[in-house]
Length: 281
Length: 281
Image 1 (cartoon, rainbow over the protein chains, first blue to last red):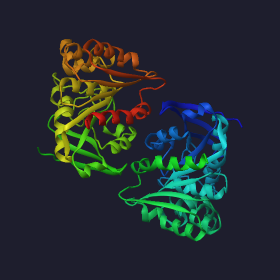
Image 2: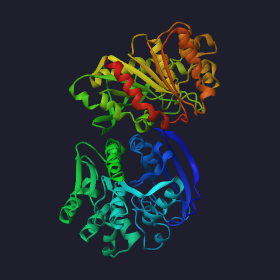
Image 3: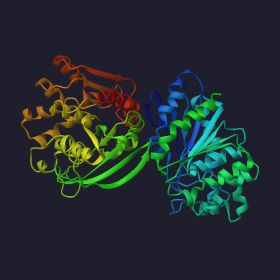
Image 4: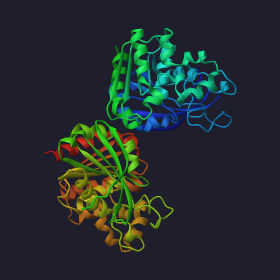
């Protein structure tokens, strides 16, 4: 593994170190930027890794600045990896829509031209990037978990469902639970994956569970005042699928909370603690 | 008191509510925007108020998004008020420099034209805005404290020194301790306050203490890797002045920390807890 990482920023924070790196991604065939927080415990030996996947329009920066994860990560000794949400740069096929193209990779491996060359975020976040970080930062490769928000909540659950046993735990804030059947995500799915909707089921949490994929359990927090609740998120479909499949789901409906980082940051420390318990079990 | 506040944003967060308001300021003779966090305890009765003054180039938004103060404020039941750093808008005298004009009001009441019409941030943050917030949000007017970062750390200490007994406690992250004598702030002081440097002493923490102003005690956190440590901040001057004046100063020098919100957020909960102890004593 050649991990040729360029350090863009490095800050001391909450007793640990917040890095931002850039590197040439093989999966996405472009330069990619990500952030990595190493807790103070990283000085004493390999730490578990918790991967956070961000939502539409975000880069690594949104959660790194507003996610309020460092206090909890330092308390529990977890490294936190925050990838970008899509390939970016000159020559990357893009679109004017905010929910398709740059900033909206949806954590799939695209099968359709011209997107199939760069839009390989599934391979990037599940394989290439964790391997680089494990190698570079001395992470305990056998202890990895994943979570995310909105499009990234979809990404976290789908990634865990598609790689059985690879992650110790998976959780989400306001995930897009059934992207195949919501207008919010259908345009992206059609362009990345083609018009045959049966192919979409392999990238849809509810469909994957219906088709037999499993995780040990699921934690989801969802704001009841989230403006995208009905139009894009629809946690009741995940609840139904989990109930039918016998997957224990803790679905916390949070009164008054919306879709923003003011919501995410409110429950971030609970999610980090929940993953820590499972990563250190 | 007519508090004609326009609500720009309102988010549920950490069990409380984060507001952003705009209003017509009498002190600054322009529209001003500020943020106010009300903890969950505000529903049960008047809360203490902790005012946070931001640094150069900032608005209310930087600390509101990156300051990580809400968890601690909700735990301790404090309202947190975050004003802007200067008047803004059409007709406000400005300058190309980042350390003078818009974003750099230095929390003084300017005496020099053309700045004396709008640049009255001292009156705004110590009198006008707290009175509006007390009236509007049911704050316990007798329990107020103040803190801030960099230019806002200067603002907090100077405001407390100039209004003896008005604030229960005062603290700062990386404050500009002696703005009269650092290049960083001299341009602003000369334009706002005139060329007679004796007038500057009334707006300089170290000089105010030398001239007899007092606060009960001071808490300051300062990063040792702060790039502005020598050129603008110089906490040793504050340490010397406090020692001579018999003001108990807790000066925490933090190894590896810089001047950013990654530093501020790391020690935010300690500052909020420190103020809470004094506000609720």
